[in-house]
Image (tube, rainbow, N blue to C red; front, side, top):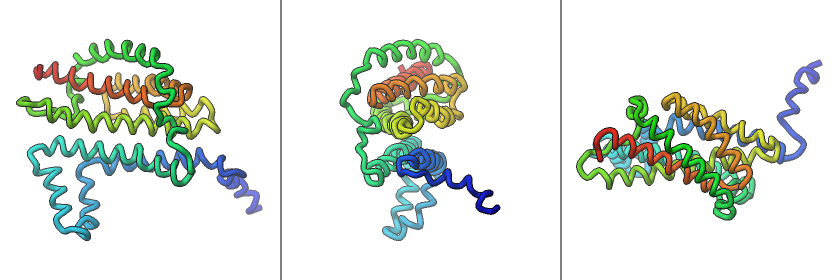
Amino acid sequence: MIKSYFSWLKDFFPKTKTDLRPLWIFLIAAICLTGINFLSVSSSYKLFSPLLDVFNGSWSKRLGYWLYGHKDYELNQLIYWGAWSSFFYFVVPAIVVRFVWKQKLSEYGFKLKGAFNGWPIYVGMFLIIMPCVLIVSYNKGFQGTYPFYEPPRQNFMGKMLIWEIFYALQFITLEFFFRGFMVHGLKPKLGVYSIFAMVVPYCMIHFTKPMPECCGSIIAGVVLGTLSYHYRSVILGACIHICVAISMDFLSLWHKGYF
């Protein structure tokens, strides 16, 4: 009777190792997204202060000053966010792929080969999206959200460039995580439904954004996921993401009188 009651647990132990891949991908995705949510905020540095002090008593103080006392502390906090986001979006799943599963990152869409096969579709997407971004940029909610970093008005381009570099890195790693690691990792078992399994958490990371952007993330997630699924590369998807995001930042700055 007891054996019969717990018989459903056998589903957690498939017959082949490949059957366990979706289980690990979902668990790793949950862990990484939790890490980003709680560790990418600047105040999280206090969690590591005891460890930093073991190696060097001044490291935690220096990090605290860099995040809160430095004249560019707002930029530094965003760099901290970008670094942690990139760590969980790329480094953690990449370690699993390369050293645990013994596979190449190219099998998960992180490659240039074949990336430009569908370039007309990506260009078409960009041309469709940009007019929408331009219209939405007049919305006060949009202007209140973007850019994440609002630089000082004097000689702002240098600091804005630093921010955009880290911002772009975050998008490259984000594309690998969602359209690469999740889509191509789940594809052998879920097939085309791996795209929609990825869209759910991708939409959820936009819950803090304006509602039109959050709704748009569902469409963008399906389209970019489908293109990655077909062309087996996340590179042009990352390029589209970066171009749109940077355009949003500079449109917002334009509305605020920077240009």
